[in-house]
Length: 330
Image (cartoon, rainbow, N blue to C red; front, side, top):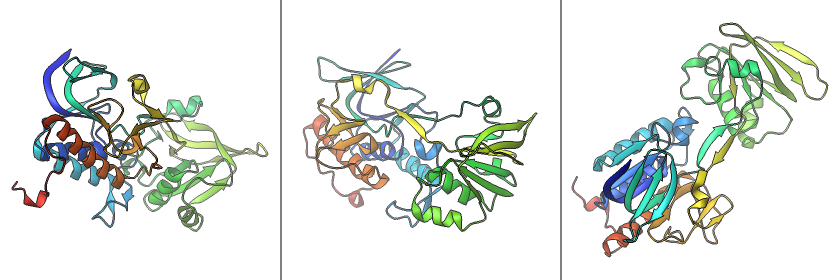
């Protein structure tokens, strides 16, 4: 059912960019709502990388992803925005009075402006079509690492050759009792320095191997892997399997809203404005005309501030520059 309350700024997405946008909107004294498809804030950081360190956030030599999310939420809550979780945006309507209707799977939200901070969209892991793997999903087979606890003193098998697979193998090698990583070829997609560290570590790396089957009754007791060049099979004792096979991202119906796209990116100008008046975009979801996207958290923070300040000016007709936060009294 529709929410008849009219907000100044509605933010689509509660990842790092969306959370900082909400903070900035509050600082500009805008009535703010955040709509998020997931059941919690943080986006990819909360779902995919909560236990991983991030090194390129200004002011932090390093910070755990989950701690960054916690601090962003705390910062955002300074202004008491409205959070709406587990609602997926499905449509956008522009009303005769210039306001916007954001249609979700659960209702309609009214707003004067919209800032889209949807990242890469909804993401789903690439799954293996293996019955035994599906049977143990969530009970020994994992696609995400939300906490390290399930892997404590486990014999862990990691499958994959990208950044997530390599990073988690390194991260868990001293936490699990043993870590084996298999990859279907001899070339890694992961950062070269991480691959070098992996090959020099205690992780048992097996190249050209793939997972055939997981064994066990109530819990995993082992796995069969095979050399994809020869077909030769090998049984290994494991009691946990982490599948890092990449993700499929989906922006849903957003490409039907009348927004201009360049491949997967919403096209914006230097003010973070889309081609629809009152609609802005920031972070990984957008591409500034003539600029190659960087897809960095730091970039998203800057774009969020630009989008919110221009959205505020769009509403009030006042100046874009908000003044310095050091001049505020909180």
